[in-house]
Amino acid sequence: MQILKSLWDFFQNQVLGMKWLSNLIGGIFSAAGLDTSSRWTGSLIFFIYDVIKITVLLCFLIFLISYIQSYFPPERSKKILGRFRGVGANCVAALLGTVTPFCSCSSIPLFIGFTSAGLPVGVTFSFLISSPMVDLGSLLLLMSIFGVKVAVVYVIVGLIIAVTGGTLIEKLHMEKYVESFILTAGSVNIESPDLTKKDRLVYAKEQMLSTFKKVIPYILIGVGIGAVIHNWIPEEWVASALGSKNSFGVLIATLIGVPMYADIFGTVPIAEALFAKGAQLGVILSFMMAVTTLSLPSMIMLRKAVKPRLLAVFIAICTIGIIIVGYIFNTIQSSVLL
Image (cartoon, rainbow, N blue to C red; front, side, top):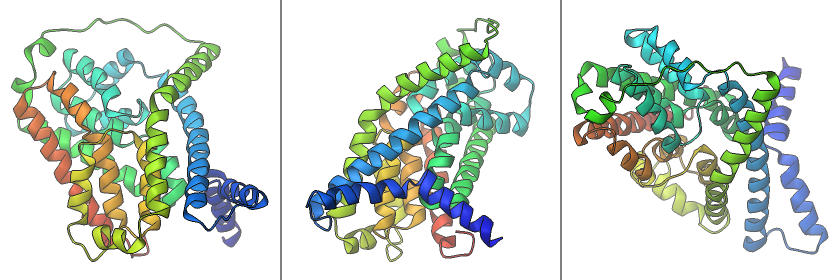
């Protein structure tokens, strides 16, 4: 058992976390005669290390997920969802959301397509919540920083929020608050062509390059903010605002995260820096969920498809769920589980 634990720790720290890369960059800076203990040098090391690490993980994960996604085009996903009813349909929709693109804005066109195809609104909202909040990429990336238990619990609670949110919207009969042009648009029932393995590999490569070009600005911004937090903001400031002594930390993090726009790869370096400074885990995860699920640009896009009352219910359900999850994580942070 100890051997397995050692192997896993090595995989988490050196493969996913790439700690060797941080040591290598620090060694190069030291060999160049730079003081690695200074704030400026430390910020630069953090920036270079995190950009390289996240870029490598990003490209690998996008390629892998895009290859998987090639088996689930919208037409096929619609047919799969159409076979289920009730909470089971919400669960399947939430699970399908894990193999879709990374940001909320890219999920809304699929949400509109599914709704136009006649799928229940609650089911499509389960998909819309799950898609940006939970994906295979977030699982592996969170494992590289917080460990497997935190990553798995994050994914599970994200799916619970997605299923619960969609089910509540279904029970409230909010269909009448979808814009009429969405409901009357109908859908084109086109069978997806059979793809060869070569076709799927080409598709995965194109998706990787396309997604990378879209998210790299947010990665650079996120890592830059993380570098500032990591090396310039005093630890006591972060602990005071977002640590265990501030019972409003989860609320603050959620409200700060809502107007921002980024995907999981842009928020992770900020989360990593906050965690190192003593911020509570629940606060950090609430911030990440708020940014990826309730970003202002995605809410503006969603408003084009639904009426204000449904949009308000969606935001309220997600916000309350995120806050509850944050406080749950804070409560159990010191337990054996986390």
